[in-house]
Amino acid sequence: MSLAVTLMVIRSAKTHGRFSLDHDLSGPQKFHSFAVPRVGGIGIVAGLACALPALWAMNPAAGRIAAGLLLCGLPAVGAGLVEDLTKRVSPRLRLLATALSAALTVWFLDAAITRTDIPGLDWVVGFGPGAALLTVFAVAGIANSVNIIDGFNGLASMCVVIMLASVAYVAFQVGDPVIGTLALAGIGAVLGFFVWNFPAGLIFLGDGGAYFLGFFVAELSILLLVRNPEVSPLFPLLVCVYPVFETLFSIYRRRFLRAVPPSMPDGIHLHSLIYRRVMRWAVGDKGAKALTRRNSMTSPYLWLLCMFSVIPATLFWDNSLLMAVFLALFGFTYVGLYWRIVRFKAPRWMHRPVSRPMPLQERDNRSA
Image (cartoon, rainbow, N blue to C red; front, side, top):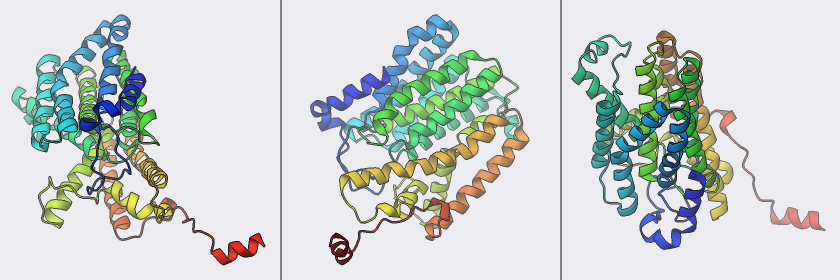
């Protein structure tokens, strides 16, 4: 259903394009060459909503939790969609709406973080208000971080698929088919959007889609912890560490290195640098087809970075010590990769040879 609804949104763009199209092609975080709808979240939410009857029939518990997540997620997806259509909702209001969605899941689904395996923080979450506050902060932060990495065709959506696949695997490992089934349903809904977004970029997630997917991944991860004490509480953090670390590093970079407000957008995220400084094989051709290809070919580099944390999280889901080691390793890897690229010293394996046009004289000699 997500596939069909997303196609309908694309086909009907002339009708609603005045509101839904992203006409801004010049912003620091804009890398597309033509205006396309930025309301891909509609298809994803519609796909999950249409899957509710089947989920309920197969597993009533899964159906109830899915319905609860969709209802609780309405403030997050709603604020994002209003921004996508009006361009007038501030980042603070979107973040507050996502925090409200997280608070609703704490209240109605008991999806609260009550253990962390972090000294000191475990004492905080030992109290109801402390657990609720940390949960709201974590869910809102992860949702915002998914929105931060939503800059290229297929980047955020495939990263979410990778994360949900890990959640599904661990859920089935611990004998929790409810969370596993919900994660698989989420993967199906995201892939229905993905085929239209990558590589052609016919539609974007938009803020509504990005905030909702971040909320959905975070909540399923927390519910997995709540329902299965054997899962390490560091599992959700390691699964989502790529977008989370990207956000934290961006705040540090803007506030302390550039002395600008952390909320000010810029074009030097890691994915932006890979696009501008690694994908040099496409430099010189300003045609829409070449720019779209360059946009899409940026994403696989970040999918690999995402898997660098998701794979160990999937393998060592019950070992907090190893999780902490891999969290530190990811941080060192990210920072090292960023500073190499920003100094034009990207690793050789990331480069693709530049295809230069044949000189006119050489072409004349060959034709002769």
